[in-house]
Amino acid sequence: MLLISFLILLVVAVSGITTIPFYVGLLAVITVFYKKSWVFFLAFGLGLYLDLIFIRPLSYTSLILTIFVLLIRLYERKFEIKTTIFVFISSFLGSLIYLKIFDYQQVLLQSLVTSLFAIIFFKMLWLKLDRHSEII
Image (cartoon, rainbow, N blue to C red; front, side):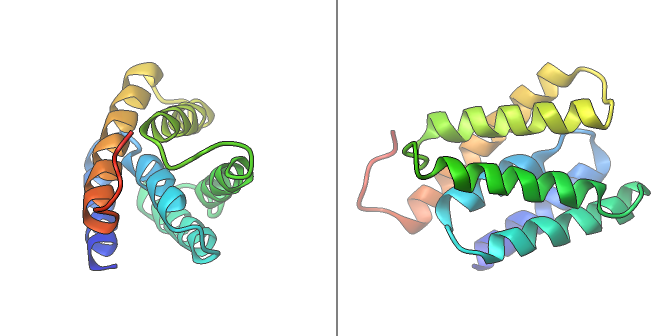
């Protein structure tokens, strides 16, 4: 849990400097690993904090991030979600939609960078938490 807290703080700090939504990728990875209800509260709280940082109306980001977590949780019943392919696709689509909603520039490039960092986060957590199985 200390690693998760450190990653969240690091991602929020870096996202305050750049326009790349690393928190979408990290949230996808946390949702894949921890299939608990506290992830919804994390998404909502992170969204409120990001709205405060970026000086947006409150709850826009939290609504988007909470729906993103809900969609990943809905797909866990139909697909195997603990794979790098699922993390890549879900973080790419999530960041693409997020960036289009808030009207950012160079959406595809930023979504690709977010997805690549999500895979790095995924592999870090996989090696840290689940050492006995393979990374696909």
